[in-house]
Amino acid sequence: MDSQQSTDGQQQSALQPDLIPEIKSAKSVFWRYVRGALGFTLAVNLLLLVAPMYMLQIYDRVLTSGSVETLIVLTFIAVFLLIMYVAAEGGRKRVLANAGKEFGESLDRISLRAGFHNSRMPPAAIIQNVGNLSRAQSFLINGTISPLLDAPFAPLFLAILFMIHWSLGVFGLVGAVILLGIALFTDSTSKKSVEDAAQQENAAQTMLAHTVRQRAAIVSMGMGDRIIDRWQQKRQGAITESLRSVNSSNFLSATSRSFRQILQVGILGAAAALALQQIISPGAIIAASIIMGRGLAPIDQAVGMWRQMIRARQSWVDLKKYVAAGMTSELVREGETVTKMPRPSPVLKLEEFSVAAPGAQKPLLPKLTFELQRGAIVALLGPSGSGKTSLMQTLAGAWLPAHGTARLGNRDIHTWNSEDRGRYVGYLPQHVELLTGSVFENIARFTDADAELVYDAARRAGCHDVILGLPEGYDTQIGEHGAHLSAGQRQSVGLARAFFDNPVMMLLDEPTAHLDSTMVGSFLQQIARLSKIPEDERDSLYIIATHDVRIINAADRVLVIQNGKVGLMPREEYLRKISDLNQKRAQLNPPNQTGKGPGTNE
Image (cartoon, rainbow, N blue to C red; front, top):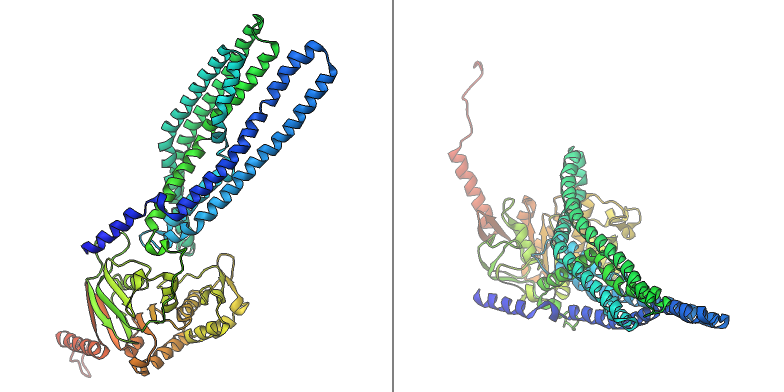
């Protein structure tokens, strides 16, 4: 155990977020495009000087000389440069949009895979962190980052103010420092409330998702209004917290805009005073006001969008932590070639193997050490909550073991690349959910499989005729906007998916729970045929969690989980123990005999 913890600790220390290849790639994309955007930003900010320079020339040259030709030339040049401004601003927006696109492409796959391969990550957290990627991506696509790109050019405008007159430059510099202070104060006061509002919004969305999935039960049992009230309370709490952060941000944004208007008035007055003293020209009055406005605009805009910036920054931080937490050695190897393993022998060996629910500290089952020989059919028995489903999910590779190893054909299941391992594992969960796509694609596990393999899997599951009866047969679309399948139809398709391509290990959790009598009969015939084949000639191993006596009678061995204990025994021994137990109960609790005969008054 200590060595395993040491290995896990080394792996976690090695997987620093900024060292993960996908994170490094996303950061590389970001900085590459930002450098390109800075080139356009330089052009944009230089072209913003066109209007004040044009005005300065009009006042100082055209009005004094009265030259119409100079006015025409200056106007032509100004219009041409302003058209260039359109091209520069459009180019910057295009670069940022492409940056957002490539940024998302570099992380969208790993964002979902990190959640899939982290058994401790709840589904709601996966959806939330994929949403974090969307927010970070929108920060670029929507151009929210533009004020931050413009900010480094503020000193250029202030320098021009100093060139007009040092006092105007000092005035603009003091105003910039005050606006920057407002921005920093906005960050310190808004950050916590924005993060709290985001958490409550996520909690409300998670509850909504859970509620919608249970819509049928809620409506049928008259719980609608009560559940809506609970969700509304959570949502209103999120809105209240969001309003708190918005009100604070809006007040500081309004303060920033008001102060900038005061600065505009102030610099006009200061420039007019200098012009009255004939220190600067009249044209410099308007030019100084425009130049200072352009220099302070990025800071003012940043204050107005500070809430979005905080959300984007926090989304990026959370996304990096999430990806790092979900990384496994398998994920690190994703871009590399994985040698496909040959078909393993259908032998399962557990070595000091224990199971725990994701995030739980205490194992559900004691350490297991046993071997299921080639082609065994094992009935997994136990009361509800005993750990049957947890054991199945762990053996399937969906959960990591709390301790020890499980080997299929001498290959460690949990260090085996899932894409390769999955070819040899058939898993039917207790609650079957099918993926958006056609019935054919679901059974074929979304591979380009030969049609005969799909039909064979459906026949083995006893649902071939059922599928042919669907509106479009195997091409019937299922999912959010597809055909509605009953619980039995979903389970039969899920069973066919498990049978697909004849896996080495079949893990079936209550396979007959929702099937009709015809499909149950087909499945039992399949198990009965297998049980008649000698074990050493079978090419698949079956572990079936069930309460169906007919499946137990077809099994070779029985694995019983009860009261935190696990026992593996031949079927005959299990049936003998059950028979002995029933006899003892009958002796201790004999039938109630009244001894009443004919004519006895009751």
